Structures are given as C-alpha cells and as structure tokens.
Length: 262
Image (cartoon, rainbow, N blue to C red):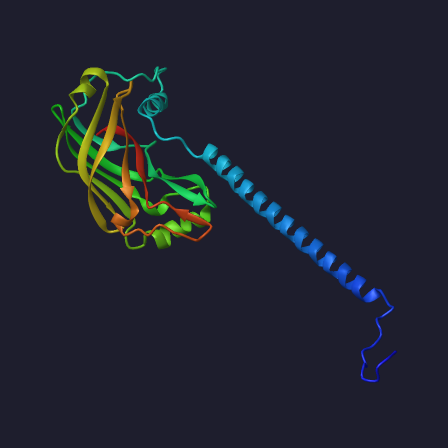
C-alpha cells in the first residue's frame, strides 16, 4: 500500500554513478602514491648526488702544506741533483719571499648536510724575514687576496666582492711581534716554533699565534710552512648562508713560503 505523501525517487538502476566515483577515487589515490614515490626517489637521489659531489670535491681538494714536501720541492727546483733532505747550515741574515711560495685559506662548506672542503690559494705572495743570531727577529708577509682562487669562479667572485672588499682591502698582512728562537734550524736543518704576530684581513687586525715549521734545503733556500685558525667574523667577514649551501665561520689560513737569501 503506497502513501500519496511519499515522493522519494526510486533507487537508480544505473550503477555507473557510484562505480565511477569509486574508480575516480582509486585513480586519485594511485596518483598521490606515485607522486609521493617520485618525490621520495627524487629527494633520495638529490641527497645521494650531494654526497657523491662532496666526496669528489673532498678528494680533489689540495692537501695541506707539509714542510718535508715543500723543502723537497724547493731543493728540486734548485737543481744540482739534491736529495731534498733538510740540511744544517748558516741561516743568519735577510730572507725574501721567492718563486714557489703560496698562501690561502681552507674552509668547510656545508652542501645539503654534506661537508665539502674548499681550498683557495694564490702564488702572489711577497715579504721578508730577518734572522739575527739564532732568532727570527722580523717578519712581514703580504698576500694578494684578489688573486686567491678556488675551483669555482662564482665562489671566487663572491670572496673578492662580498666576503672581503678586496678593492678597499686588497691584502692580508702578517707581522711578527716578538723574536723567536730558531737555533735548531742552523744546527739540524729544521725548526718547529710558534710565532706571535698580528694578522690583518679586510681592514681588521687580530693577534695570532702561528705554528711554523722551517726547513733549510740542500741548496740553501728556506721553506716555511704554517697554518693559523681563523674565525671569519673576527675580520668582519660574513660567512655566506644560501640555505642549501653555507660556509663555516671558522677555517684556516695556510701558507708555504720559499725564502731566498737577500
């Protein structure tokens, strides 16, 4: 028995409506899952790619200077079939920075969580040292910052124009502030000392203590290898942070000098 007040439409006999909705929902879900998978794979590939890049750049980064290697190179450059071993001998007098000298910096970049060693160097180094008796009594070393190069021109441009205003402050200068005994250099051909001084970078001057290894080569040249920890903000240098890549605020100033008797 039917009621005249019941006007509800009869159930639809067309099954395509709810089935189609179920199919659309399944397709949407499949698309979301596929997109998520692509995102995860892409992110994984990106991170793996960053790790591979970091490993490659770290392997290609120049090694830190060592006194033995630099003394050998200085002797080999002098010819005469030298063995490259340090040699005892007279060291008193004035010494000037000669060809083969290098200076620069070593710092860690963080690229997507991976540490990348960056080394910048230049051979544009000048200066002199004075050995009086058995003491290193005077030293002044000047590095041309505008010529420091890494393996990336874009990074070098940032260093010269934004990190350090090399147009206004083109040089880094180390000056010895107290004499240091180097008697072992004449006696054995090598000496390892810590020297006090000032380091000027970007118009800012800080007191520093630098560990040095000096060696006298077979041909009479001196090599001086050293490194000093540096906090860039102490010199008014702001370490860049671009989000995906940043630079540690602390690094090292390093150098290898060849000194010839004046």
